[in-house]
Image (cartoon, rainbow, N blue to C red; front, top):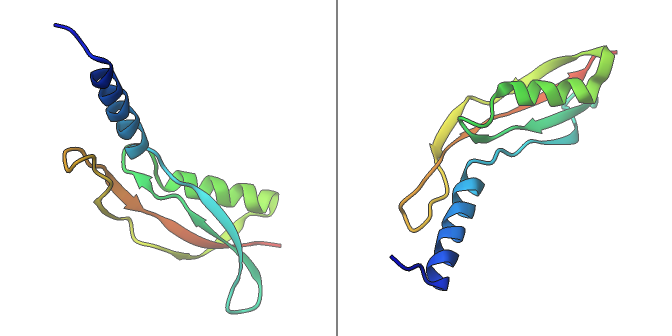
Length: 104
């Protein structure tokens, strides 16, 4: 069995796509709450096997430090089939985000 250069490139592209599909996204942004106080929106969406609510709570702890925080709102742990490669592979992506206010 011989493997051509284009075959190797296809295998590499497939491997990269599989790795990208399993990535999680964690981001934190400063925001203003309806009360006028400063809060943080934290998004920790991603593949259900690679991310969880713990990532959101960890970021909230990093933002507020020793003061701690109150959870103002929390999205449901909804999921949907995510990115595909030619309709063959897909990931079960969970949408997770919360808004926190640091205690003082």
